[in-house]
Amino acid sequence: MAGPPLHVFGLPKFGRSDITRSEVHRIERSDVGREALTLAGSPRRKVESIMTRQNRKGGFTIVELLVVVSIIALLIALLLPAVAKGRDKALISQSVANLKNLAAANETYAGDWNDRQPTGVPDDAGLVNGNCATYLSQIACPPQMLLGWDTNGAMWGYFIGSGGKCSQFGYPGNCGNWVVHLPIGLGGADSGYGFFRVPGIKSFHDYVSGKFYDPTFYAPKDVLPYSNASKFFTSAAEFTYDGSTYEDSSYVWSPAAMYDVKVFQRNGATLNGQGYTAPTGLPAGYRSPPVSRCKYPALKTRMIEHNWLQNAPDSPINSNFSGGNTPWFFNHGYNSAPACLFFDGHIELVGCQRAQQAEQRAGKLWSRNSPLGTGGYYGNQSYDFLVDTSFHMLTTDGITGRDVLGAEG
Image (cartoon, rainbow, N blue to C red; front, side, top):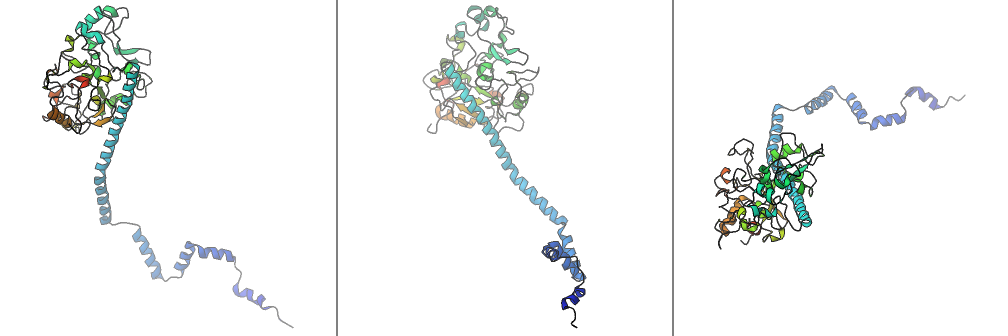
């Protein structure tokens, strides 16, 4: 009788297994499985060797850490100046963008007002020698210098009172605010301030954004005014006053260009610095010239950063002024280079040293004999003795003059 098939006797030899071939295959392809099988079949010294290498990879020595820290510190020291320089350029670019917007606003204003520049003083104020009270009593009640409506429906402005022909309107204030109507105060306690400082007025801000406090009016590098004004940027009001904060724009018009040309016209055939005649003695002295009167639009500045923002001192406060809150002006440092908008619409940074060199080449380009004196526009409060310029402010020949020269001289 034949015995059972051989494969029957083969089963007990291998025994029963719950691991299928596919499961074994997966273990063989698994890195974890391979490592487990390898370690299981390795001698003890092999296992200890692998564990030692793994422990060394998990930490650093003190020397290694110090080297890494030193490298990081060196990289930071190398990168910080580049980062600061890049940030500075970005802030300047924003100021240039602001001036581009203001250039468009000036052009639109001129288009609406028969080629006029923004102005606050009546053209015929020279008929009464520029005297506010006499003008109100004898000629007319001029438009008031309005700043804008607040959220409560109140209008704010530099009102000149209800005297004379303004009596029917009952305006607040008095003629003490007349200086804000003039291009710039030339003589007396109000010297150096005027209409040129307040581009945010309603008659002009309606061509920008409809607000006195708008980022367009403030250069980001003009830290103190920007910080104070920024809290009003999101306000829906045209103008806001919280009882303490008021900031003029970072940008200013050229006051010399806003007077009749005869006011800063040179006396004599040569530029000798004697380029001033009081507007009070000229019937048309306060009449603002049209933009088309500009003779050198690529060389005459129209708007400029008022404060010293490029290459400025560490302290933004000018200690030469009393009160402890007046910043350095653009003409207070030899290395100052304000961003400037020219009458032809182009924008560039003009260094004070460039303006001074232009004077050396072409003679006196700004008046030395105005009521502001030989020091010009607060020149006596300058940071260094090298700077001596009031370009843009007291330009000889006014709107027909030049603040800089071209490359050819």
